[in-house]
Length: 290
Image 1 (cartoon, helix red, strand yellow):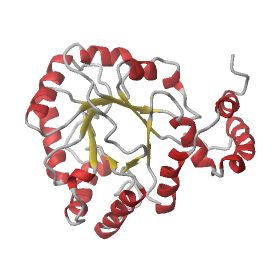
Image 2 (cartoon, one colour; image 1 turned 180 degrees about the vertical axis):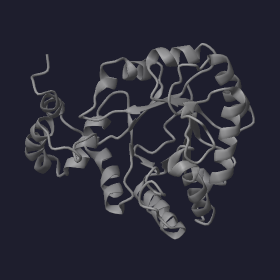
Image 3 (cartoon, one colour; image 1 turned 180 degrees about the horizontal axis):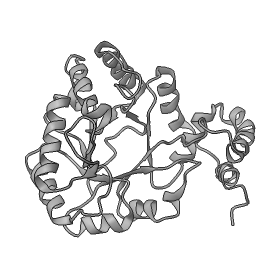
């Protein structure tokens, strides 16, 4: 397995930078890129579908004028989801034939105005995907230097095993947080550890700030005890919970707020004590850990 330590511990998710969120101008994107790098976030997570297939174009325009050395950052993108908005599709679907994967990656390169992606991910599993065509696409893109690494997103361990029957999978990006901890129990992170596969988590703060429910009220109560101890806010404690896992998970944070980005990378300096980590888990579960 190739080295995945090139990625920053916290990854900047760009989904809300464009029309699906803050609608940042080119100059605002440039400023935000520089801020990320200054605080230690050098990896940027994209997907072809973000902003109805327009985010990569906007980011690429900003990056081209930013003066940032390409070798100092890591660009990640995803492909495979075919939406009805932004493309003339009759129905939303997944597409993973060789030609499409290659074409999609090349489109991302063109839009991002770069010669290569550090990591290309298959965005979501398709019930019709087959390992042969996927492997041919990955091999072609790797051989031509258009991608440095190949991985998947939202795949189960068995789906990865199927793909790996033809080609190595170097990363898996899944939903993981204190309020959504399935990857710790369904074999996803066991697989990442055993195969030295890079693990990433999207929505790392879970529903903590979105929902007022019994689970989150229990977690808040525990956080009141821990905030002063670790000199950390609630979002930092949520990230610290993820960062303690031995799968060495890289949280993908979706904020475009400079202060929140700085606070996020600072969470990497927090080392939760063992019993505090389990106290958080117990609050999330609502019962003692069995």
